[in-house]
Length: 275
Image (cartoon, rainbow, N blue to C red; front, side, top):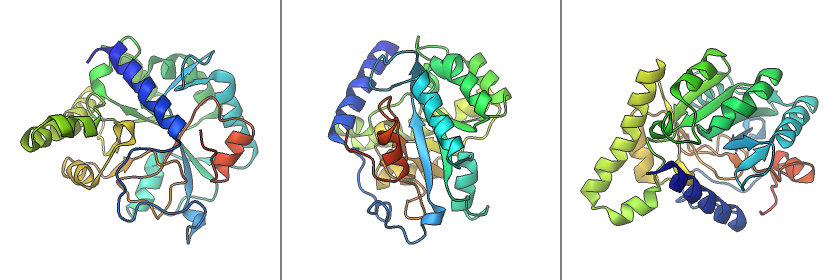
């Protein structure tokens, strides 16, 4: 899949998704709830998902640098705590204490070069732990993507954890329709295993987490992800993450350049406006 086609497809998909105000994930038993009704809200965390950064709003998936810094500064000044995603996952696995109230987790999907070129200075300025979800087929190949050298440099800062976003970011719903059951099973296993194996080998890490491409997941995909060695997976459900989430469909907010002022405050309150 060419980088330009991949980028255009992603932009169109997410533009429609933002306009619709929802995500096309298959509902998962035990994964959902009405916003603000958790029995233990002190265990909720905010997980933000970014994609690319620029000095201007190039498309719906771009966050401009002034907006990104506004968000980081606002969170810091209002008593929020940046924690690594791994800390929260360890809590969900029963390996760590519950995160403190007002915890925030920053994730970034796809591996766009702007993470290295533009976002890195602010991440270092605010000393924020970030989890990158990478699909390795693009790295050192697609014009918009980072190189392996840049990924290693991010890892060396101690601020970045690198995890899987499948091997080439497929739309699993499309692939399931076009492939036979046996072909689809083989395809899914390839996407999960090849990504993990490549990242582990290239970066000397142990990948245990996955972000669902386009936010698409279902019971079958979650089972196959577990079988491939993933302990947790991240969705795009547009609500606070908490004990109510299935650990293979942890909720995140997709961040856009619109999320400043009142719109950003609505997300923090768990009442994001429809987009």
